Amino acid sequence: MTHSKNNLEESAIETLTYYRSKVRTWIRWVENYRERTKLMMSLLFSIGSQADSRTNLGIADLTARIAFDTQKDSSSMITIAAVTMVFLPGTFVSDNQDPQLHRRALHLSVISVEQSWGFRGNL
Image (cartoon, rainbow, N blue to C red; front, side):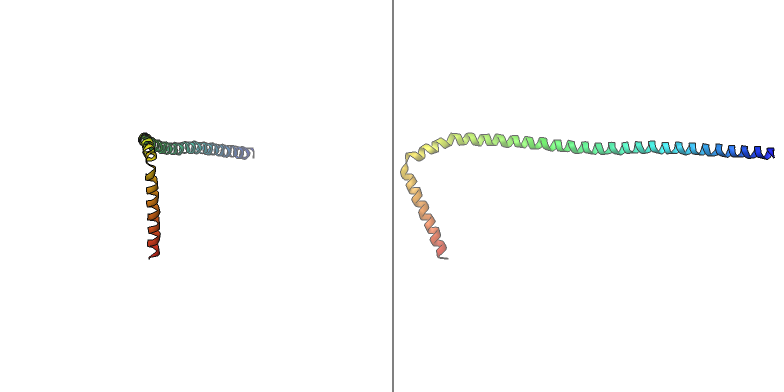
């Protein structure tokens, strides 16, 4: 009986050793998959960051173009302002030299307004 009891204990020990080995293998597989998952997540994050960087570079290029076009518009506006400053005082002085010109222009505008109203009335 002691012989069969020893065999039973040895068999139980071998079975437990086998299961312990299996569990250790499963633990290694789980750790392996955990590490692979971390690597995959890092890869996906890196790819997303690269796409964002490309988008930001495109936005920076468009912003530079807009700034250049705005600078060109600004220089055009300065030119227009300079031309206006040159000719506006002369226009003011020449307009004040002949006050009759104002009366004639006012009279012509009143006539043209009356004619346009009269024309509308004839429709």
